[in-house]
Each structure stands twice: as structure tokens, then as C-alpha cells.
Length: 184
Image 1: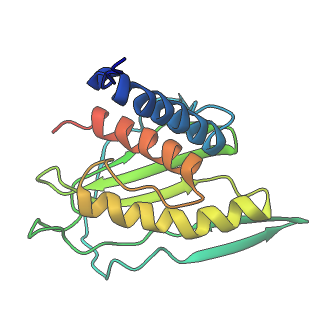
Image 2: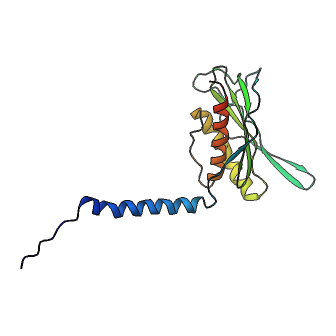
Image 3: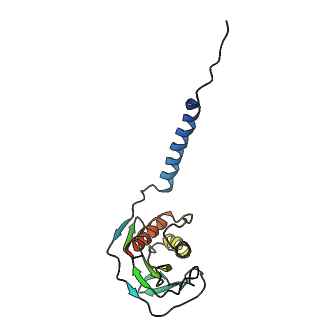
């Protein structure tokens, strides 16, 4: 008696690997974001306000300041003026305040400044979750990086900072809303 072994088809060889990969990616995604990636935008885009003077400095992260009001501490990221991007003119164009991006850790609101040639040249965080020490610590380190990357990219296509995924989702949603509303 002769036993002939039949080689499995290519589909039977690849299907288990693909199925396990899909399940693994879904599992990792669920671990990274158990509450879902819901970001709601509230409010209208602020009015366009032309700026009158240009400011320049380095692309260092925004300084952090704290103000004590009664027993609460409110922390804000101060604006960081930026040097012109890619030979563009100074930040002398429109100032646009975006809607509030509401996500599971709180609210985040941005303001962007454009050049007269409609190039994004500065992003300022007006409001972010800072009512808990962990939220404040994460956002104080990640948001200046997001500001810098957004200006360098000129859009909302920026990399996520590890540990600040939810803030990244809110930041990119808010910035994209500003970019969509700003006339190009």
C-alpha cells in the first residue's frame, strides 16, 4: 500500500495565520482603547482674527504655568510662538479657535495661527484635561510635542505619543476641524 501525502493548498496554509493576526490586532486594539475612541466636537469654530505682529522663537515645547485659585490648581500650556515654516512668512494671518474636543478624560480645545499664505504656523492648547495628576502629567509632556509636530507637518497627520493616545485622538480631531473650517 502506497501512502500519498497531499500538500495543503495555499489558502489552507495562509488562512490560520491571517485569522490569528486579525484576532491579535483586535485584542491589542481593545487593550489600548477599552472605552472606544469616541471624540465629540462641541461648539463652533471661532472667528478668524488677523494678527498684526510677527513673533519668532525656536520650536521648543510650550512652557507650563500654574495658577492657584482658592484651593484648585489650574495648569495651562502657554502659547509658543514659532519660527516661520519652510520659508513661509511670519505668523501674520488668521487666528482660528477650534471647537472643544470632548473625550473620556475631559475637554481639549486648540487655537491655530496661519500665515497670510494660509500655512499653519502655530498651535496653542487653550484647554486640556488636568484635573488629575496623571492627566496633567501626560498632557503637559505630550501636547507640546503634538503642537510642534502639527506645525512641522502643516496638518493633523501627526504621530501619537506613547501613553497619550486618547489626547492624540482629541487633538487631531480638534485640529482637523480647524483645518477644515479655515479657507485654504
